[in-house]
Image (cartoon, rainbow, N blue to C red; front, side, top):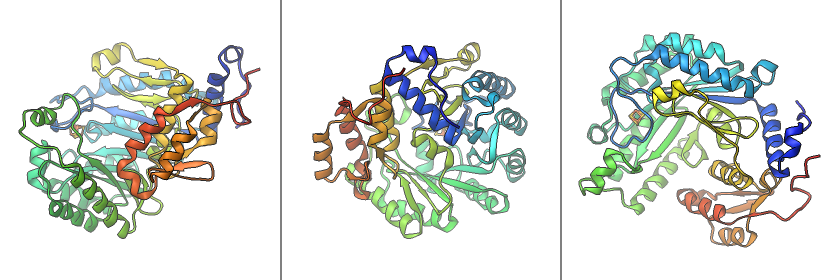
Length: 415
Ligand code: SF4
């Protein structure tokens, strides 16, 4: 679908901002968009968790679904659903533990969001939170992909992290998956745990490869501000993994997954052929997505970012949440952060055209000569060996951002 001509309001905006809006709109029209739905409940809180999570014996699921519907009523106008614009390529129920949400509410939300034929619908699932019959109900309601939060099979490490499930529950859940008509599923693996030895990581990898998930998402344990685990570290009661061991563990995971036929398509994500996560991949590449539910972030097709309140009562009282339109430099930072970790890398021409900013050429040269980046066909990419230190290269590129000199690729002034 061609981009609409700029409106009178748009013409009054600075040229670069108008160009960002048009570029984002064209991208959305070409690819459709995704929807992320946040379900904020868990049965217990993991010690490292920094997400918006409520531990509630009687969650108000119906009120939550009502709130998600109210969020969607606001976002539908921006995503053009009513105007016949492309429908969602994916819906992702994340949390929290969305597998706790009764099927009727999942089905209701799915009935509201227009989806393309074959759209990916992912539900995050924690072992112990749902049985096979419950999973079948969700699949019948439209879920076709599961993201399973196993994290580790090691009972001692799971206990120390405060994971709310046992190894037996994880194995029981995994055993049901081949019997379900899913298009794909993903296994969450955590590593770099306090006092974790390489042999223990290998045992987790042995168990993972025995199951053979189509997709694997990695999480190197981090100590987020305000979490109980961070407090324990600050009190000297647990120790973060040594950075060299962290890097060795990451390398070991990559080596073993690649040897087993997985493709690393993002720093922390691996897929067997045909099993990349459509939703996440679109987000990493800067695609638009509606963020629904408490604490959900979103990116509208016009380039506006949305953030809904984390507190349940505040969210229900103010469903619109915060809406901000990033300045050109912020849009450039977002683009670098979201794209460089993906194997496709950062398209410099598109960055310049859409945001009017580019990283300083001398700094790019230094990063390439130092082996932190490689260049080809107008793109900057992370060489395979540089993935563990990706954050450093990303930070240096962000620091080196400058307004680009006018060229054929910089946005033309809006008429
Ligand atoms: S299961 Fe996930 S969302 Fe829930 S407390 Fe643990 S880390 Fe947080």
